[in-house]
Every structure is written in structure tokens, then in C-alpha cells.
Length: 268
Image (cartoon, rainbow, N blue to C red; front, side):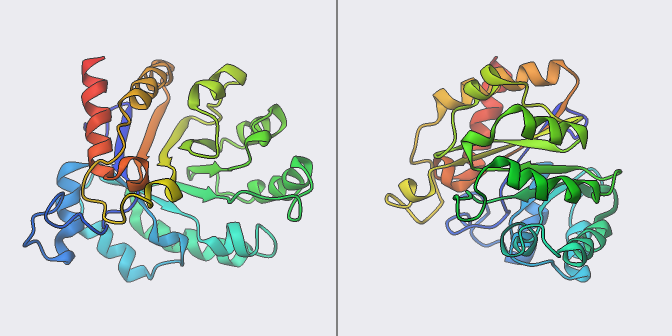
């Protein structure tokens, strides 16, 4: 799929245990992984930026090793979303955005990935929204941002409306703690921006009981992928572009999950 397509598909990170010899040629040096990856997919969600803001030279290196139409989605560092949880994090966030901008036109959505919050952190959704609202006002208007939550009871109009007011995409996730995507669409319109962001995450603890080497599919996700194809069709018919990323924990091998979706998408 070219980047002009209504949906861009990739994986969460471009390296993983078990990929050399399966996704990557066995003799391919790690320094060439990204360039090879970019021959197969047009976008990648970079997981490493969650742990820390990368150096400018690293980001420029990503840009030079990929084609002109390649798109990077970057996770906002955990210091913003987890450690400081939007409090006194303006300089951390701005530094991350400044570094990310070195990707130029290859910079796609930036993901604010929040953890599950218990009542010790936020007694209820209104407390979180009170903290989130002023932060969203600081987001650069010309950049794309997506936001992920893992409190299923928070998928209600006040939260959805706040994202829509700020043109921030609600990350649509297929994850063990969260309801299936058909329930999201049954309750509300989950498209909150002029693009949307999908993450196939799965059950991390469950799948790690079977494997820690991500070299092959170990969970059949055909049924779930067919449902996603149906909803992605609905989204793209509205003229909304989709960025979608498969995690290894979803089925065992991120590239194979993307290939499964592509196969079903082309057949549908």
C-alpha cells in the first residue's frame, strides 16, 4: 500500500527477538534493518521513544534510511504520560517534539499512551480530564496526536468530546483489558480527529506464557482481523485516514498480523 492509500499499516517497532531469519534475512546487519523494513511497510510505530527522547542524530538517521514517503509514528516518552502524568512536564514534552521534528515530512502521529489508572491515581474520570484539558491546549496544532487509555469505563462522551474538540485521535486498541472494537462503535463514534490510530496489542501476559520469541503466529486472530477490516472500511469511506500498527503480543509475530490484515482487506 502506498502512503496515498486510506490506511497505512506497520508494526510496533522494527526490531524484535526472532525477527532475524524470519522477517529479516538471517545475514542482514542490524544497521540495515530499518531500510529493509521500509521495503515491506510504509510506516512504523517507534516504541523506543517511550523510554526516552532519542538524540537528534538518531532521528536524522531514521530519516536518511527510509524512502521519502515513509511515516514514523512516535510514542511520547513515559516521563510525560507515566512518571509526571502531565504535571510539570512541558519542557520534557517540548524537547521531545523539537527532536521529533527532525523527521520533517516523515513525522506522523505522536502517541500519548497512558496506563490503566486505579482510584489511588484518579478517583474518577473528571479528575483525569481536569488534568488532560490544559495539556491538550499546549499541543502544536499542525502536528498529529493520538491518545490511548486503558480504563474502559472512561470511554464515555465527556472524554470523547474533549479529544474531538482538540482534534486528537482516540487510539482504537485491541487489548485484553478493553472491550472489542464493535462495542466501541456501538456506544459512540470513536473517530475524534481527521485521522485515526489503531493498535493491535493483544494479551501480553497471556501470550508470554507460550512464547518470548516473536518469530511466528501462535494465536489465530483471523476472526478479530475480519471484524477490524469491516470497521476500517467504514472509517475510510468517511475519508478518514488510518494508521494501524501490530504488536508482536497480538498474535506472536507483528509482520504476520499485518500480512493477515492486508490479505483480508484485499479479499473483502
